[in-house]
Image (tube, rainbow, N blue to C red; front, side):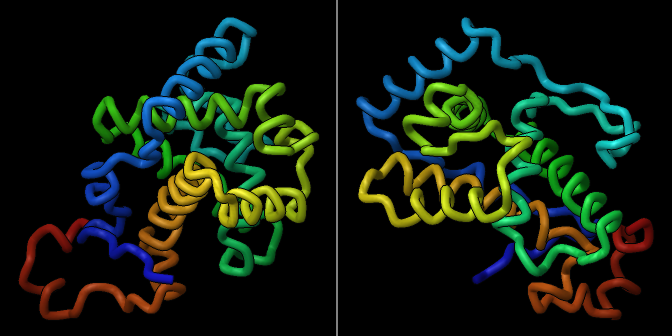
Length: 212
């Protein structure tokens, strides 16, 4: 798997992902996603960004303010990241929780920089996965995301990866791309993708590296 290189600050680069449509749903898929998203909002699903979360229990940075992901989205990624990143995550439970929390924060920060079209597509995708009716009937995930096991999350991802339905394939690609960029593009995990970091001559020559 090819993982994205970070910028000089050690943060993931989401720019390439923002140049293209994620889902390429076609008219029928777009209408379906739009209907699900509206229905999910009317049913009382979380719609507002999560804002600041307590570091206690969540392992989130208490100073970080979520500007796109809502609490349901965060639970979604907490369930999916162990299946998507797998053995690259730390084994020690506390370090593992911190790595997952940091990756979710970087996913939010990256999506916040996207243009309105891609933000809209991702919001509709997340609503489809979070809304109970479509989570069960479309994603075939029977438990709410906080109760989904890694094996169940892996099975869901495999179904969408191998599905003959384009919406599901592209949904899988969107989820895995933004997660891989947020995880492997971060300084602490460069070594996992084979990226050794910037060469020393660049660190010495370029002022932006001095504050990295």
